[in-house]
Length: 296
Length: 291
Image (cartoon, rainbow over all chains, first blue to last red; front, side, top):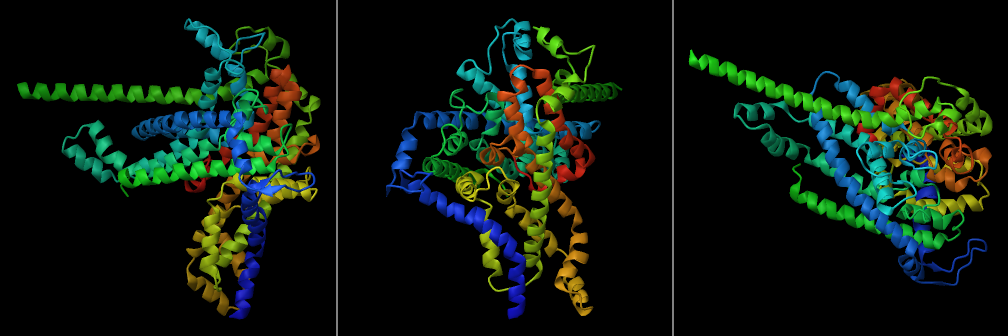
């Protein structure tokens, strides 16, 4: 038995080394960093221990901007993308011909590079000296005035960011929801049809309760994903997100770590822990609500 | 007789309504399809417009009558696009390969071998799944910097290997293989490692393919870690390469050439997707995230 024990551990050595070195140790370290005041990354020294880093971050206007942007992004994109994905999935499951084609097309954004396709969105929305861009052309057709969506007013930029974020997250949600809809037992629908129940009522009383666990799973992962938004914003507005007023919490963390404004791992750690606390709280609230409304 | 007519009327009305609903459904689905496809169309279209004609269109045109491949030549000659692609390929292949070895070995230990503390270690592994990347990336950045591994493949690859979820996925799959096979192999004097290689891996091939594809997609599109750890152009991956193109290279003035680069970058995964469509979609449904 002793020999077998040793052998089993041998199989686990690579995984334990990788996880220990790049996950467990950093996890402990990030808390230590966040309490070390005045940490200097060049000399690796610090003055003292305390909560100054947290108070610095919470009073930093850039962080507050990032916090505001992230919350707006979350509140707009999570319900909208989940709702639209539900509509599309219900539509998809009600048709037969061409269903595979539509499903394939809808999945395409999942396998694209966020940074690369973000550039396409940028040129579609951008207003330059040579051209107002395609979207502005469409707006003009309908009698509107051109708006600079990339370097213009705050809400125009926020609109593009939300639009692109939804475009990026839709494939996953549609895929998960269509498979959830397909797994609802046909018998329920037949029984309801015999009773002459209206379609809308069938949807509300049978379909929704049956897929509610999936729906809540998507809402929870959607919240977590949206709180970590970053590369979508970089793709649209470039790496200097603070100047564009479009930074996100994750963007703030990386800016503190590296780049022109970087070199402050302590501030970055404090911001990362604040982010983690927010995500954890929201997830717990979600779970509490789901206990009331989800039928397992 | 009157009743007969009524039935027909009702039936006709119901059929018409169904047709209408169907029509609306197709219409709305098509609109979303256009929203999804249009950026792809636009990037291909722009990439074959000549520099002069693109810049002369104050109102962008939806088609071009004189497509050119000049932009693709520019994208490869004016910026090191080939270098970015090669770097990404090396990064993706090596990371995925190391990940597979690590995942297979530990999944095997959890599924097949018995040892003291197995459940405890497995629970600890699972709890690591909840740790967000943003929390550990800070220390990893400092570690890699202190080890002088910035701008090296080792620095890029090593922290990207870990994937607890795939260990879990494969362990579940391994555990489904009946014990009898193992005992039969033992009676024949097969070693554990040989059994893993000759029996378990072939049986669980579909899961392994799924894991591989998901990891390849993740590696090909990864942006944050490569950006933190490389500032030497020779080690850029496509994601930060394209960002560099945008801010200091082609993008400032030559949009068509930039779109050519975007097409080149997007193509490999799109082709992979069209080949393995069913596998990828099933795999993502089982274990994918994003969004």
